[in-house]
Image (cartoon, rainbow, N blue to C red; front, side, top):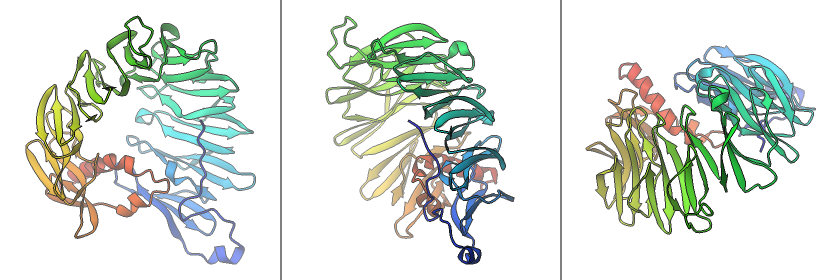
Amino acid sequence: MTGRLGLPLRGAAVLAIAGGAAACSPTQVAWYGHTPDRAHIVEVRQKGDAQWLVVGDRTSRRYRAIAADDIAFDANSGRLAFAAEFQECPERWTVVTDFVEGPAWEAIAGLRFGPRGARLAYAGLDRGRWSVVVDGTRGPAFQAIDADSIAFSPDGLRVGYVAADRACVRTVAEGVAGTCFARVVGLAVADTVAGDVLVAADRSDEAQAHVFVGGTRVRDVRGARSLTVDPDVRHWAVVADAAGDGRGDAVGASRLVVDGSEKGESFDRIGRVVWAPDGSTVAYTARRGDTWRVVAGEHASPGYAEVEDPLFAANGGHLGYLARDPGRSVVVVDGKTVWESEAPATALVMSSDGSRRGWIYRDGAKAVIAVDDQRYAFDVAVEQTVRFSHDGRHWAALVGSLVDRRLYVTVDGRRALPFDSEELFGDPAGGAQPRLGKWVSAELELFLARGGQS
């Protein structure tokens, strides 16, 4: 799969407007957003057939179009990069990094910074062939590149991705192409070559996948469907077929293979797989018949009609999940039920150390945010937006008032911070909603940094 930038912005289509009309047209804001810390507004301005980017007091030169839905930021270093079209026929794009232009391309995809902004990578199309560029250095050219597969090592210094030429699918790490495979299930890039994890199948038997660690084949599995690694890429887990391993499992059953060994029972389906931050254990959702469970290590929870993804605290060994049965919701942390109600609930979140918990449930016409033993009722509470501050002392969420017909960020259920709904609903790619939790978290930290002043 290859991505392609350059789609017209909503309300800002790239048109060749004849002389006088373009000259007389007013300057308009074609798109705007914020930097990841929410401290500065970012605007794409347009006049006639020209667009330019403004961030704080910095302004880019004018282009035919700017792909506003793919502006890349590094939250730590403050760096930014964006794709801009500077020529229409033939179509030519460039990546502008910190307001400095790169080479010309027919199309650009997968623009992103690695951890801590150490490196910048993107895929570029030139004469019908795709290459990945890392910090200005162009890699080998291929017929296709999976832009979504561009991955960085935990330290941000190494880059890998999946590319294809005809029937050959290869992984590329640090510009070096690997072996030809029929398909690649997953690739994880470690801080060193010895830790890289690859799951791939060759053309002799596409159902039989091989697991490689550091280039060494460590395990064969049939029907491999996904690869999940811990944050440091020291441990791996593969969802694969359970049938045929001598345990009498039904055809179509799945089992998790962890660091080379089958773990736990087989299930009809294995869903989300999540590693603990320190890599000490793995948890996942699993279904047998109509019943879902959360499995952590060798222990499986009771069965429920629905379970949401398991959640590990960022710093610590706490594991929680939220599950539902008809007329019943439960919140479970470290194997103990901490809340149970007839009310439908969703979106469990924990503070970094796991000592505080929050979730949302319905109580009649109201949405209730539960934070530990406290309850806060609102007309509207947007799911997946409850967030704790870095120190765990405060929380925030995106909520709404039906009377005032507005959304706002509530802090600790008492303070109300303005929220830019126009930015949310005006996103050109409709991709703002997945970022809402990060927006709320950034607004909370900004509010606290200002001493709790709006």
